[in-house]
Image (cartoon, rainbow, N blue to C red):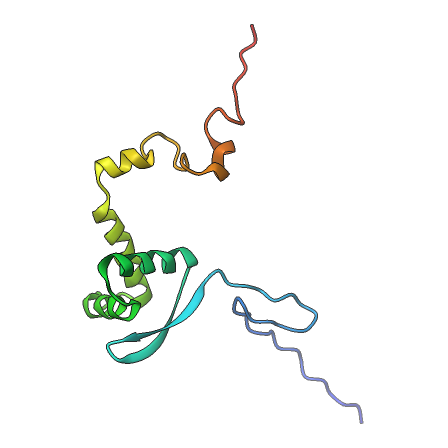
Amino acid sequence: MASHTPPMTPRPAIEPGIQKSDDMATLKSSLISRNITLNGHRTSMRLEPAMWNALIEICRREKLSIHQLCSMVAQHKAEESSFTASVRVFAMSYYKSAATEEGHQKAGHGTAFLFSAKQDFAALKPGAAFQVRVAG
């Protein structure tokens, strides 16, 4: 009697950062997971490195721990919003409210070149790499 092999079922999608098999390269996520305590309850949160850096800077300026800051955000978040989304909106709002015309001018904003202060992006500056030559 011949044995019957069941049809192959598709594998579920692999989460970033999880290795599928030994012969497949590990996929990495750009998100960093960290443990935090919200109002006495330990949990974890995944954010981009730039967002973690922004939160750490806010904590330094406001003399708060990351746990205190996140607990405050959790207490004031909209019910329909996720906690992580609320943290991102809080950080954006914090820096937006701190922005002044003087600060924008010092940073070179409004010059049609967002990365004007970054040497790494010097080649992107208008006219640096793409000069229009007029035939004469």
